[in-house]
Amino acid sequence: MSEIIKPRDWSSQPSYIDPAYRSTALRGPTKPLIPLRQSLSELTGPVYGHDCLGPLDADLTKNGRKTADPLGERIVVTGRVLDEDGRPLPNTLLEIWQANAAGRFVHVVDQHEAPLDPNFFGGGRCVTDAAGRYRFTTIKPGAYPWGNHHNAWRPNHIHFSLFGPSFVTRLVTQMYFPGDPLLELDPIYKSSAVGARERMVARFSIEVTEPGFALGYEWDIVLRGRNETPMGSH
Amino acid sequence: MAKLTQTPSQTLGPYFAYGLTPEQYSYGFLTSIAGAAVAATDTTGTRIRIEGRVLDGAGVPINDAMIEIWQADDQGRYAHPADPRPLNAGFRGFGRCGTGTDAQCRFYFDSIKPASVDGVQAPHINVVVMMRGMLLHAFTRIYFSDEAAANAHDPVLATMPEVRRGTLIGQLDESRPGKVYRFDIHMQGADETVFFDA
Image (tube, rainbow over all chains, first blue to last red; front, side, top):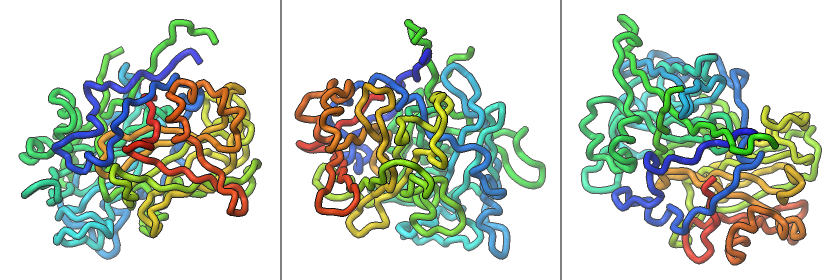
């Protein structure tokens, strides 16, 4: 192998244990991570292309529709998946899940007293094109309360899961919306340092906005890049 | 090329199941890209099952974790372009299982035993651990208790204190038919599983 994947950027990534996010206390590893020299096991990873997609997978306004359109504000979320060197990553799978417009998840564990929308499911997926671009049509998710502390509310967000080119480029993250007053009160968003957390906030775009139909948001996602090894010849 | 900075990781939260493991959790709208059945009927190799729980720092099994595995086939080949060797028919080598559908909070995978990928490393399965309350996924590996000779020469196991190596060994359960390996993941405590800076 002539290249290896760049390390996790610890100045951008959150800590395993973060006192403000209480559930981390008993769930994050406490011992130092053991360094792992990358081998074929780390430099390969699952390959999922366009063949894994259903026709409505990227349109959450349609993939849960039963009798009518889902309620809420329609939005388009699009952007590119890139690596740290700015290379677009084509053919990479994105999986998303989110609450409905009222802040309720379809998941059976969610007991928040906000209405379910019979026409909205909230899960979808998409594979990037040759330029690394993805695009979802969905409903803007609502905020919802959670039990972390008194009067805790999660800001509006969409969960994103990506593989990237190898097993170690895996990323699970959340996309937030600009101008949300709950961001500065949210320990999950704030688990990443100032200067890094802002990269999880999408940008409103009038260019992406579809006239008469949906507001547009742009959000680029950056995965770990590649290094040339000094030896380069084995 | 432009220098960009990594997007931060966030927890997958408590409600991942309908997005990532919809079929396992019986959500009808979306198919699953992967599940606990890793090997297809025509995959060659020794059939194995991996079974385990994820335990928090109080020793309590976690019911909202998700485990992903990535493994080579019975010839040590990965189904990925970086591995130029030809593929085992129908074997993608990727599995995904949540811990929320079993009364004991177990995950499991039905797969085949991988061979050594390079003739140096002992046979192993690569693992990603994620859950609510975890902001950044953790990497670990499953080795096999009936590969003691290969494990003794594995360069990755050699990098950690001997007392911690056992946390990465899936234990063959002799009391059950077939090859069932038990692999509990301890997030904290005296038996904390080894997690990698991969």
